[in-house]
Every structure is written in structure tokens, then in C-alpha cells.
Length: 216
Image (tube, rainbow, N blue to C red; front, side, top):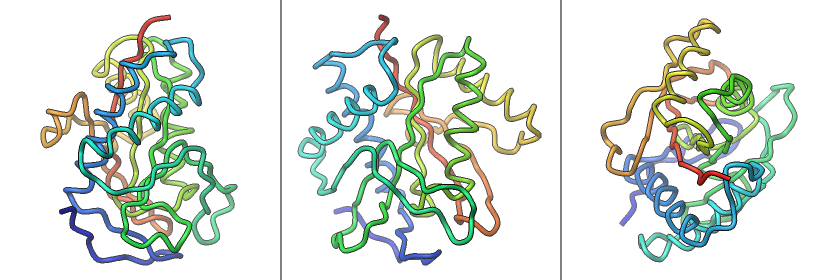
């Protein structure tokens, strides 16, 4: 049984995700990607939205295997937080774990980006148009409901994380470095990063899952 922690409220009732739900979300991504790879139909040159669609389809198929009741949707519009000036976001993948689905805001959001350790532009986009979308309030999700998925189209997961960290250091954000997540190491290359966003979402942590994409 997945525990449902006490709701928090930041602009709207939100779910504070407990460790078992965080693990379940990462497990859904890991197993969902295995299912997607088995079905095929994509490669390293495929567009980001197509890769995210295959991941979402695989995650839906994995629900029954894992024994979880959830709603999973892709390209979900979400509200920005409070008075933040940024436009509303469109989450690549959104999940609702709560037993009542009577409000629109997801409990968990997965932002997907193509990454290549040799491509400086994709590394920058992973941070600026990925991680920072959570920190700037584009998405309204639970305080630990922030998940990044990197579709690795070149290099390795560790290589990508090293390049991301170098870019964060360059931006003066060494305290936000991606670190290997030993708690979820059995689910693949999972990293974790700590953040603070005063006045916006009470984000304390972002999980990073890196999924290898077949060569074109």
C-alpha cells in the first residue's frame, strides 16, 4: 500500500510525496522505458516529444505490473505559482497518485529532455529549460514531485551528469550539483539534486533519471 502523506498548500492543495511514492515513480519510469525499448519505434534522432510519448505509454503499461493505481498523462498544461510572471507550463508527463482526482494539478511531474554529454546546447537546455522550470514556478506539483528524465542520445549518464554539474558551477550553483542516488541505484542511473526556491514552490529535491536511447 502506498502511503499518502499530509497535504501541503502553496497556492493550491498539493501532495507532499513520501519516499515510497518517489520510489514508485522512479520504478514506473525504469520499467516503462524497458517496455518502450522492447516495442521500439524510436532512436537517438527522434524528437523529444516522441521519446516522452513512448516513455509515457510504457509507464502506463507498467502500472499493472507494479500494482499501482495512478493516472498518467502527457503534454499536460499546468498552472504557474502565485504571482510568478512566467507563462503556464506544459508538463511532458504528469501523474496523479491521490485517491481523489477532483482537482487539476498533478502530484508529480516528469520533465523530459534529450541529452548528450558532447552537446553543450543540450546540457544548457537540461538546466535552463528543464530543472529551472520547476524552480521558476512553471509547474505546480508536490514539493518532492519534481522529476527530470534525460534521454541519453550520446555518451553516458555519468558523463551527462558531470557536464551538467560543470554548467551549474559556471552559473554559481555548485550547491545544486547532481549526485548519485544510492537509495534508488537498483533502478538505473538515478541522480538527486537539492534546491531552494524562496517564494515559489517549496522544492527541496529533484530526482534525475537517465535513460539510454538506441542509436539512430
